Image 1 (tube, rainbow, N blue to C red):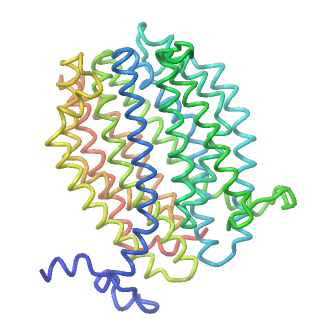
Image 2 (tube, rainbow, N blue to C red):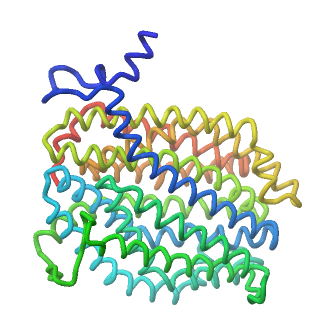
Image 3 (cartoon, rainbow, N blue to C red):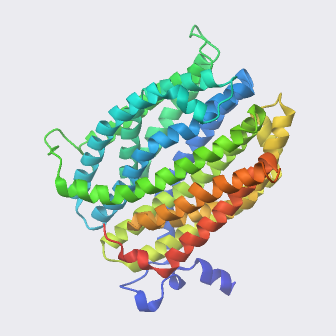
Amino acid sequence: MNVFKRFISTEYMVKPEIRKGDIPSSREAYGKTLRIAIPAVIEMVSITLMDMVDAMMVGRWLGSYAMTAVGITGQPRMLILSVFMALNIALTAIIARKKGAGDMESARSCLRHGLMLNIVLGLKITFLAILFAHPLMRLARAQPDTIYYAASYFRIMSLILIPQVITMTICVAQRVIGNTKVALKVNVTAKIVAVVLNFLLIEGRFGFPRLEIDGVAWARSIAALVAFGLALASILHKDSPLRLTLKDSWRPCKDMLKTIGKQASNGLLEQVGLRIGFFVYAMVIAELGTDAFAAHFIAQQLMVLSFTFADGIGAATTGLVGQNLGKGRSDLSIMYGKIGLRLALVCAALLSTFCILFRFRFAAIFAPDYPDVVQAAGGLILILAYALPFQTTQLVMGGSLRGAGDTRYVAITMMITVGVLRPFFGFLFAFPLGLGLAGAWITVIIDQMVRLAMLLTRFMKGKWTEAKV
């Protein structure tokens, strides 16, 4: 019992010699973390569950080729979004610090600059995405039976890139100041709209046209516009801490752009490494065939669900770490990082148990008429169960370091593990060693273990508390 108390108690999380004031009680600190984390977890889990419903509709109504066509667009789309995710990493660190320092005017200025950059970059990238949709799908190793459908889906989704990335930026800013209920409302409402429209458009119900895979794309596009409207309303409201108006100064500020650029360059390094690594890894999976990719796509649904729990906790940890550094309380930043780590371990234990017990039942929901796909997906989910303790904890550790502004180290870590180790070992295990799909997924465990070791080592040394934003 004494060991358990030492593990969970805030009293033992910060060494006496680095304390800068009183340490909150365990009840107070965990309560504060959970008040921010729970809406974020509900939001992300709800989104993922509704994405699963989308995938079930596609798999059950259209077959494995359709699941593969939709799934194979994932990494090219994420590669395009990497620029905007890098920008959001920068905004996270800056807004969290400004919020902690009580400088909300600078936080709002940071958000304004982020939105302007979204529009400028979005216009250029939208044009390129539509123009090169087919070559990108070919590069992603789409097979002849899926490439036409994948390219069509990709083009439609690219049309709403600007509203989508603006929504992402607003939600990131709201989360980092602790207002996670806004992102919950925005994204869950949009996903409900997407599910309803999928029901109507995939097979053409109640007089709506039968659009099949394109119906999924149009449903998600319309839902993205709904999310955009709700997100915009959240920062136009008179009581919003991040309220923006036309009377504000929208003239670009060189100093703010320089600050954002410094943080975003590290975030871009991280995102490019991530997306190239995931892209190459997805190409390896695609080379194994349509059914193999369908099994991979099903197992990924559960992997993404597991990510959402850690991401929700990480959202709370990121904000609290950054805010307390802004207040000059690096000791509390360390404490909240460790609280996030402990909460992530609890989530991992529960999720791993679910994966082991229900892996085949879960897979069968997506492809009941494809027993070979279900069998393969069940094996991948078992591998995921062993990777989850490493996955959830490294996500929270990475969030803590990003919240502190230590984005360069996180970027280097991601470049090494996702950009190099995962695709290299994925190819090695799948083809030269002949382990196929299971071999490609074993590399997930290797990637997550190395990533956790690097991030945890950095966190425990504490140098990240000195990072400048």
